[in-house]
Image (cartoon, rainbow, N blue to C red):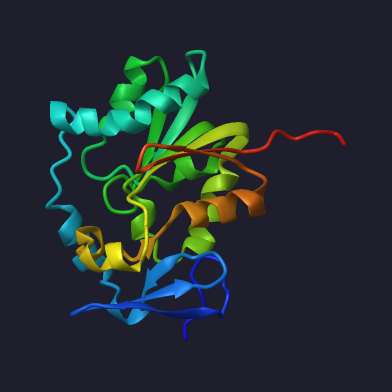
Length: 217
């Protein structure tokens, strides 16, 4: 079997056989992931993203994003924090909503906002909204994103969570050809334990994680 793309464990097994793709689950971190042979090319992946309609002016989309924005703002407290929207997509509504709350945000997306200079900064908060499920190699991307977060900073994630095998078989979320990594509460708890992070689950699909503050001890 393939090594887990998140924790590198060789303890993976078939979780679900779909009509078009094979899904495996890691026995260590419980990440469910797609057999790499079924990953799209970069051009095919971008073509799917270009079909998304994430209009910053759309009230329905703003309500959707507010499920992350509201609890994240409560954690940030005072105005004037500096953030990064990592994987912002073609229509980044979240930075505009955070600006309305008094915070500034840089944006990065390998297809739509590829200015890599923003990846050299440190941030008080980072958001990944409907992003982590697209990560082909989360073992690389996860520590890279955490490395841009200041001690005490917050990482805000929005993604649908794996429940169990029966629910997964009926789950439309797995059918998107760009979705290749599926996290569960257990997976995020595993990452929190490994990184000394505080983790808070908000509703069904929002995860807030706080980076530990450095001490002299």
